[in-house]
Length: 333
Image (tube, rainbow, N blue to C red; front, side, top):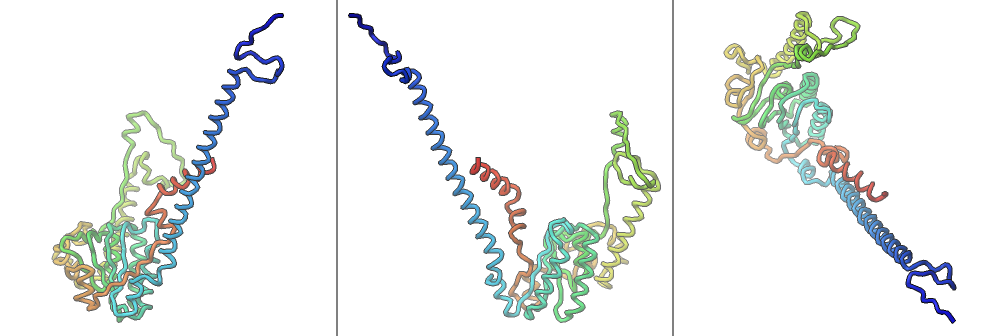
């Protein structure tokens, strides 16, 4: 009788489907690793799922605060008694984010409608901007003032109220500023670059096709002709003339133009200098003007609150958007 010793790992002849021990170990290890991977993936899914839920709840809370809570805001409740209406004018005029003219119109009309606003203060902090937007705002403020002559409109300049901002401020009944404020800059500017010499050095040729001899005027890669330079200057002087006309219309004989030939030269003035040349009426802050001039120290902010889309784009910006997209991608991966 012969006996055969079966080594570990040999296939059992009685069970041809039995896997060798080495294959069985690999299979088991693969199953364990696969299960661990699936557990981690499930854990990651639920982790990111709750992140998204938390973020959505937070955004819903912000939305409810900016929309549903407006009527119960403490500042809105103050409008039921005598107060000074405040409107914020910040940033570059005509920066593309807001219709600043519409903002000023809506805010002023809301203050008039309250019936308890003793005056309107435009709290200005802007370096200027679009002459077109500034001129429209100037005219709209004067129009609304004419319809509500019993409610004076004041501008209080903070750090800066220059160029287009001062254009708008000139429409007010009076302008106040801090002695260290920067105001004025009654001028117009346009700039660019001339890269033609650099192109010559690099051996680059410009291929620009136009219909009209001045269509490419201002192109930095094309030489500027004397005629085009004259046209640009004429345009700037015309816009400057409109600016000067508006300031004179708004400020009247308070301007000391004869004593200050640089008044419309585009230079800026400190608050101290601006009072001497007639660009502002006196020194003051929004608080002192409301308290000492208007005699209504309670301030009510009539500046429209940002809606949810603006809140996301400005306060959270691209970071929140990127985070949401990243989280959603993780959830559905």
